[in-house]
Image 1 (cartoon, rainbow, N blue to C red):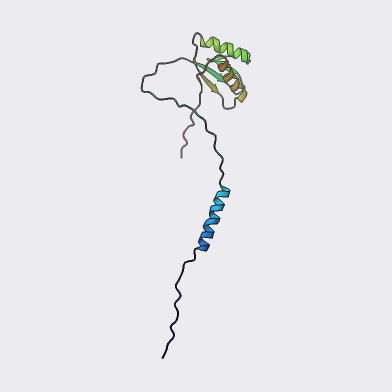
Image 2: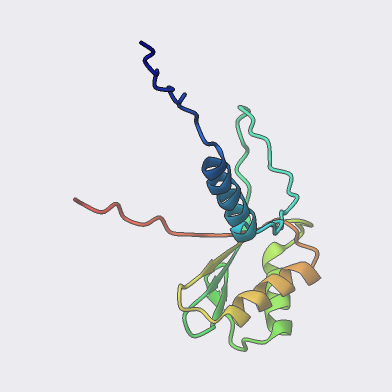
Length: 140
């Protein structure tokens, strides 16, 4: 007697659907990715040293919420650019490059701050900083 043997089918792994899914994922990622280059500022950060710093006098410019200027706590009667430059020149005295610190109220018009920066630049004062106030830590 001759018995017929069943032919066994070998299992195979079909990779075509897997390749299709991976290709579609790759296409999706390429299409949705933005290739814009972010602008970067080239700045040279100051280096810290352990030397004791000498106390330097600075020129304090305060601007209130209404745009009134105070140079070393003396109010300017005329808030013009010329008056501000003259007051800064007088307050600087014989110092060629004093440290200028601008204290501006949070509601100060931006134009007033720009006037103060421009006056310092026109006088050749290059050491310009802004004073900020630290936020009080919140209690949880």
